[in-house]
Length: 168
Ligand code: FE
Ligand code: FE
Image (cartoon, rainbow, N blue to C red):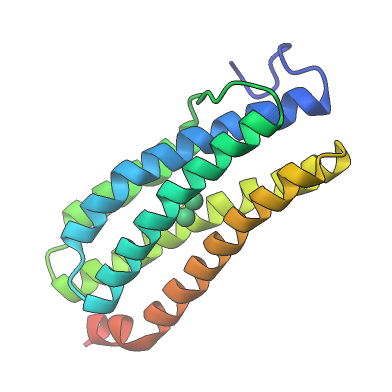
């Protein structure tokens, strides 16, 4: 179903479609993070990815909760955007040999993923409120907060010793 397909008539339809989109994205991220953990060298980066893998499993559960609250079945729709971000992450990582440079590449890729999630959850929180679903908005805001915290943590790691070592 295309983003502007005729199946989406109302803001409610769009809200559900976007929930399905981020549900797909979270499941792809859940599959991608173990590969990023395997490739990462810096212990803090590995720990950060491991923590976010657990959080990502929680995001999927919260989304299932939101589907249920909204009275629709949990379903994923293909999201070419996250597929592209993850494919590029994989390709770049495959081209990097130096371990420190690889960590820098993994941070950059992970931040692209977080920013995608942040834009989706930001929109979903606003739409949920506009649809009078403050209950759904509150749950979605919990996911948004964890994505934002992860993005900040990655920025700190990137600004800190990992990129400095990569630049040596
Ligand atoms: Fe997430
Ligand atoms: Fe995330």
